[in-house]
Structures are given as C-alpha cells and as structure tokens.
Image (cartoon, rainbow over all chains, first blue to last red):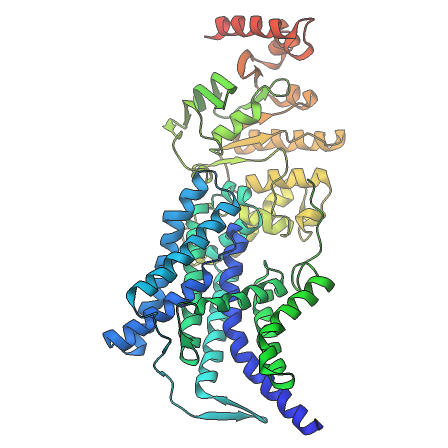
Amino acid sequence: MDSDIVFLFLQQGIASGLVTGSVYALLALALVIVFRTTDVANFAEGEFYMAAAYLAFFLIAIVGLPLWAAAPAMVALIAAASGLFQRVVLRRVAAARGVSVNLVIATLGLSYVLKGAVRATGFGDTPRSFPSVVPDGSVTLGQASLSYLDLAILVTALAVMAAFFAVFNLTRTGRAMRAVGMNRRAAQLVGINLGRTERLVWIFSGGISAIAAILIAPKLLMTAEMGGVVTLAFAAAIVGGFTSLPGAVVGGFIIGIAENLVGLFVSTRAITVAPFVIIMLVLIFKPQGLFGGRLRVRKV
Amino acid sequence: MDDLLSLDALTMRFGGLTAVNGLSMAVKRGTIHALIGPNGAGKSTVFNCVSRIYRPSAGRIRFDGRDVTGLPAHAMAGLGIARTFQNLELFNELTVLENVMLGAYSRHETRLIDRLRPGSPRTRAWAEEILEGTGLKDCRETKANGLDFGRQKLLEVARALALSPTLLLLDEPAAGLRSREIERLDAILTGLNRERGITVLLVEHVMQLVMSISDTITVLSFGEKIAEGTPAGVRGDPRVIEAYLGTTQPGEAAREETASGEAAHG
C-alpha cells in the first residue's frame, strides 16, 4: 500500500469515524448519565433507540408528518416514556428493596417488551428503510468525502452534546444530577429530591437516545433487532470509564474511528471485532477506563 | 421557651429488634440538647428517624408545631433541619467551597437567575462566610477527600450550616477528634447557638464536650429514655451510671432500669 493511499484512507476513516462515532457517543452518554446517577446499566437503551426509530418512521411515513414536526414529537414521546419507566417500574423495584441487579433486570425486561411491541405492530417483520430527510450530495474535506446526511448527523450530535453538557455543568438541575451521582445520602441531606432527579436523568437519557436514532436511522435498515448497536455504546462507555461524560464522548469517537479504519485497512469483515479489541486493550492497560480517574481501593 | 422538635412515643423496629421503644422527648428552641447513651442505645436511629432516612414504626415527629412524620427526606432541608453523619457523607470529589455551596442548595433563592444557575456570587459569599466561621477558609480549594479527618468532620458541620438551619442535628461530631479540635468545635457550636440562635441536637460520646455545651441531656439505654435533665443532674443519676458501667447482671439491671425510667418519666 503506498503512502498516498494510506493517507487517503486515514482521512476518510477519521471523517466517517467521527460521524458514526458521534452517534455512539450520544448513546454512550445516555448510558453513562443513567449509570452515574442511579447505578443502573440500562440494557433497554438499545430498544429505546429502536423504538424511537420506528416511532419516527410511523410519524413520517404513515401519519405523514413533516420531519420538523415528527422529530421533536418523537423525541418528546420517547423521553416521556423513559421517565415513565423510571416512575412506574424502577421506583417500585427500588422501593421493594431492589438492589442494582434487580433494577438492571427490570431494564432487560423492558427491552423485551419494546422488541415485542414493535414486532406486534407488524412493522418489524421486514427490514425497512427510513425515508431520506436530508438532500443527497456530498462535500469534500481534505481528501475525505462526507454526504450531507453525514454532516447533518455530526453537527446535530455535537450540538446535542454541547447542550447537555451545558445543562449538566451550569444549571441547578445539572448540579443536582452530579450531586446524586457522587453521594446520594448527602444529596438528599442538602435537599435534593432523589426520585425527581433520577426521573429527569431518565428523561434526558431517553431523549438523547431518540435523537441518536433519528440521526442514524436514515443510514441503516430498521429491524426489531437494530438495538444491538448499543453494544458499541457500551464499548464506548467502558473505554471512557463508564462514569465520565467526556469519557463517553471520546470513547464513542474512538470506537467509531477504529471501526472505519479497520474496515478500510484490514477488512470490512473485521469491523465487528474492532470495538472488542479496543475494550480489551483499555481493560488491560487502563482498567478504570481512559477517564475513570485513579483506581480506588474500597474497604469491604 | 417552646418545643422546636418533639418526639411522641417514637418507636423503630428492625425485624424483631426494637431499636427505639416509645421514646418521647422535646428539644426546646434555642437550646443545645445532647442525646447520650451506651453503644446500641438507639441514638443514631433516633437521628435517622428525624431526618427521615428511616420511617418510624410508630409515633409522631413534630417540628415547629408541624407534624413531619410523613415528609420525604429531601423536604427536611427546606424546613431548616440540617444534619451531619457519624461516618462522613461528603461530596469527596468536590472542593471544600463547593461542598458548602451545595449545602445551600435548598436555601430559598428569590431571583430566577439564582435558581437556574448554581454558584451565584451571593451563594459563594455566603459559603465563604461559613468557611471563615468554621476556620476552613485556608483549605477552601482542597478536595474534600484530601482533608484530614478533623477537618472533614468540620466540613460536615459547615455544609450543614450553609442551609441556615433552625435545627442542627450532629451525629458524633467529636468522635475521632483531638482534644484541641474538640475545643474548637465546642467554641463553634456555642457561638452558633448564642449568636445565631441555632437549636442543636447532638449525639455524642465525648463527655468533655457534652457536659460543657449542653443545656439538657437525654440518656437512652436499649432504646428507652432512662434519664433527662441538666448536665449536673444527669451525671449524678445512679441509673445513668449503671447503664454506662453495668452491674454484675447486666440483663436484669437493664430491665429494672427500664421499668424505673418509665415510672419516672411516663
């Protein structure tokens, strides 16, 4: 392989990697904010994303809403459903002295319910393609080429991340979320409503997953199993340390870029292996993740 | 003087264990009230009931004339009840100043901008003032887990004060402190009580502190009140001495004490 091609592949791999990576980053962010504040690894994350894609498909292709109306409506509905899940299911599991494992199993249950629901509608029988919402065409950056859709994905994802970081770092609500993640008892002591804060986190998490879905759906075929992509979001979160928000974003980009580079330099069949190789490398050399802070020894 | 906090036949059972049994007591407004007793007497359980971490099995808790037994834990801050924990519960990754500023989370902010944006200049100034008063000003930028134990204990008190509490619940504030640090704590608490009229209820084993600052002392043993009164009165009470030092047949003695304690106070 001569150096020109290597250089071209590098540019294209990084550019495309940033696009897919931005979607992984959003999904990882949705996972990490829930894990930080509620200690729950949300295994229904992928199904929220899948349900969001189908809901958007339903609103646009069947109801006939324009994108500008369908997208916000869908995001609001999924966010509300996520909050409702916390309020109705998780709160009861927790009230019944459920520990973290019980809560995680509740999310697994939800993932089956959502998959079943989509299959029951009949939409999930055959893979469907999402209506194109961005005009065709592409731009060239350096030697890399990105479609308008790719650009729209990247720009929207970055804007959503920036907005969430602003909420998380600059507002009273965000401060409450961070405080709950650090010390629940102390948070309650200073007057933070744990239930309300957790619910808000789930609402944000659902909303972010829904946005990720509408961004990437036009590039993929929709099936009831499309939530499997959440594995890559878990990979991104693990690479970032699982509790760090910037870590989730950086992890998402690393996974996205690695996939694309492996696809270009090695083989497209090796793409699925790339994230796991990265997880292994991270776990071997920095087990707490890239942004996981120092290793702590817990007293048992 | 009226009652700021009153417990009415408070009972807390954990399965078959009765940690607090029909405890009635009142903390008068503007006083420093100590709750003492041997290990396992139920002191911390009383605290956890008052700060709503536990839901009492029976009995009522009244604060400032209002029944607060059914309120959620986070509502206590808004009422003006602050507490510290025996085993520190700090925001370890935050600085001393940030911990105290978070302590002011529930303080009523009238301006919308202050409600949305944490760390307004006013909150910051308020937190600085508290750090000054508790002698933590020098380490305001230190992370909470980087402080020595004595200062972490003080920081718990400082964070509780940021709420501008009417009632301050202190769970063993002096445990593990050196005697010089205890003297400083003594001075801080006495100052708060005299100058700002904060009512203090503390659980404490360090008798040096308890005897020096308390107006009233309630003594618990096996979840029941066995004595109550001024430091001098409680110190000489034979039931208290027995509860602490025990007799040759501790089980029997405890039952007898309980009976006589109830007769005296019931």
